[in-house]
Length: 405
Ligand SMILES: [Zn+2]
Image: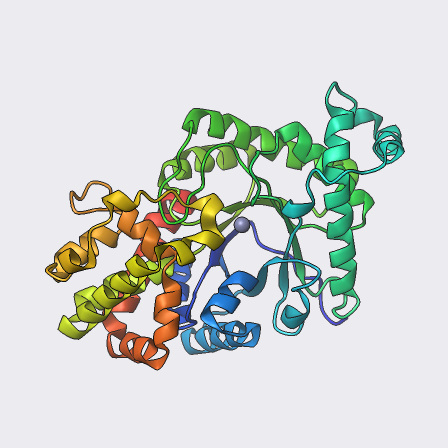
C-alpha cells in the first residue's frame, strides 16, 4: 500500500446519479459548502439494483466521478460507493469502487448456535443486559457475514485503500442504540475497520419524500446512537472517525435540524446518503427547459404510470403510493411546466406538490433508462436548466440545513 489509509472526513454526502450525467452539478453543491468553510466530501453511490435497472456498469460511475472532479478542479477527496453489495454482487465493483457498503440486513435474525451468543457475551460482559442474549443471537450471523465480505474485498484491495460501511437499514424493525453497540462490538471482533454504519432508524424512510414518524423519538434515538458509536470507538478500538450513515432515501427534511443539533452536541460527523433526489431534479430541469423537455418528462410519467406495479415491487419496503391519488397521464398531458415542476419538486408549501407523483417518478427511472439516448441526449440539450436544479436542490435543501444551518 502507498500513502496514508483512506479516512472519510467528518461530513460526507452520498450523491446518487442514476444516469451518471450530473457529477459536475453535484460537485458544485459541495464546492459551495467548501466556500462557506464547511467541507462536505462527495461519495457517488449506486447500488447493484440501480445498475441492473439502468443497465449501467460500476466503471461508468467511476469514470463520471473522475471526469467531474477533473473538470471542476475539486482538490479534496471523493469516493465511489458500491452501495448495498453482498457476497454475490461485490465482484464487479472491486476495481472501480473505494467505498463498500456491505449489506447484511437479510442475515439479521438468522439463527446462530446458542453457545455462540453466550461465548460472545462472555467476551463482552459490559454488554450484559436483559435482552443481550436475544440481540447477540439476532445479529451475530449478520456481522459474521459482513466480516466474510470484508475479507473478500480485502483479498483484492489492500486494507486501508477503501472505506467500509456496514448497512442494516433495509429491514422492518429498527435497531436500538443498545443493539447498535452490540453490533459494533461484534464488528470489531470480526476485525472489520468500519468507518460508517447504517442502522435502521425508527419511522418510515420512504423514497423521495419526508420522514414519517415521531421526530422527537428519532432525535432521542439518534443522539443515543451517537453515544453508542463514541463508546464503541473507545472500547473496541474501532476507527476514530466511525460515524453514522443515514440512508435517507432522499429528502428527510424534518430530520435535518434534529440531526444537526445532536451532531453539534456530540461533536460527531455523519454520512448522508441521498438516493434519487438528483434524478427527480433532472425531470424538473427538463420540464422547465422548454416544450421538448416537458414533453419527454410527461412521457416518462405516463410510462411510469403504466408500469406502476413492476417499478414499485423492488422498492415495496420503502414507498407508500396510493394509486387512486395519481393523476391520469391524460391529465398530466395538459400540465404546463410550472405545474409539472411544482408536482415533482419537494416543496410541501406548494399546492401543486404531489408526493404520490414524486414517489412514483422516484422509482420510475427505468422508463428513462429504456429510452436510452433519447433521454440522455435531452439531458445534454437541457443541461443549463437541469444542472441548475440539481445543484440548488443539493445545496439549499440538503447541505445547508444539515451541515451549515
Ligand atoms: Zn440503504
